Amino acid sequence: MFGEPHIRPVLGRHILTLRLVHRAVFAGFFSVAFATGVSHASDIDYRTNSVGEILLAQRAIADSVVETPTAPPGTAIPAVAPEEESVPVAKSPGRAFLLNMIVPGAGHLYAGNKRGWVHLGLEGATWMTYLYYHDRGKTKEDEFEAYADEKWDYARWLAADPANSGSDADLLISDFAMNNRQQYYEDIGKLPNYWSGWEGYTNPPADAQTRRFYYGIRNDSNNFLKNARYAIVGGFVNRIVSAVDVLRLLKNRGRANLGNDTQIKFNMRTRPFSNENALKITVTRRLY
Image (cartoon, rainbow, N blue to C red; front, side, top):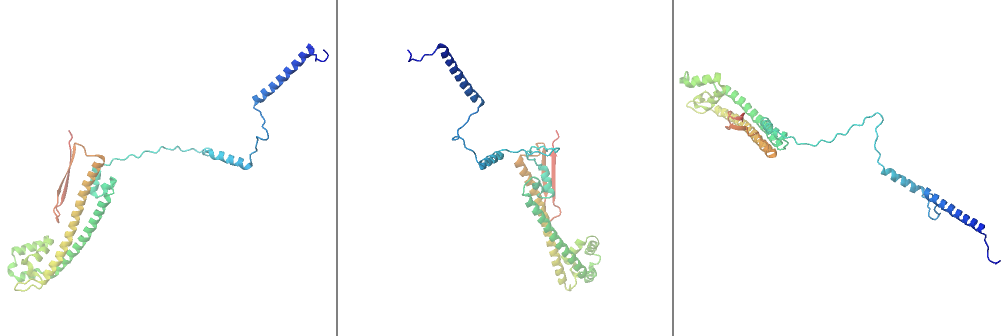
């Protein structure tokens, strides 16, 4: 009996109460620790970062942030207008046609076609050719007229054959000398009836060397002026070709036309080496 521990009931209840209090205190401590998120790691788990690593991390964060430019206070930020879409502008076939009739190639350039430079270059070459040959032809013309005034004499022509006085040939050449100098210079060098008026003409009749020289100068003048007319004809053809070509080009590109009620017609009259070349354009439109 004396060797066995003996606990009185009052003391046993006291010990049990202390154990329950201790358990409640520990439970409350751990609850507060987990609720506040406060924890402590051991020295083995924790490692301090170096200064270089911290600077690199800060630089990476700064580079990843895009700063929005801000205007100074009181400065209005201009609104960015939306880019307008380029819409192709339709070209008028009629306008392109008229431009090419005025200046070959201008209609093509208006329509945005580089072929216009070719027609424009041909137009420039045409005028250069015309001016060159026309100038040389007129120079030779002045030369042979001055030579004829010196070497052909009306009185000599009458003295060579008294029957010439008062004849139809006399009246005709006198009228040409007063009113039509071009025909006058042509007849005295071309028609044998007037050859006797040239210096060096002999009797019995023999052609004078002066007349042959005169006729050669006049022939050179005519050839130069004929080449000038060639250039004019070439320029005329260049206008027609360029005008028709730009109409075809625009119709094929945009299927453009003058309308079912409108028609355009061309009438050309061309005679090489003639001043009677002409172009007629007729535009008709039905009103009802």
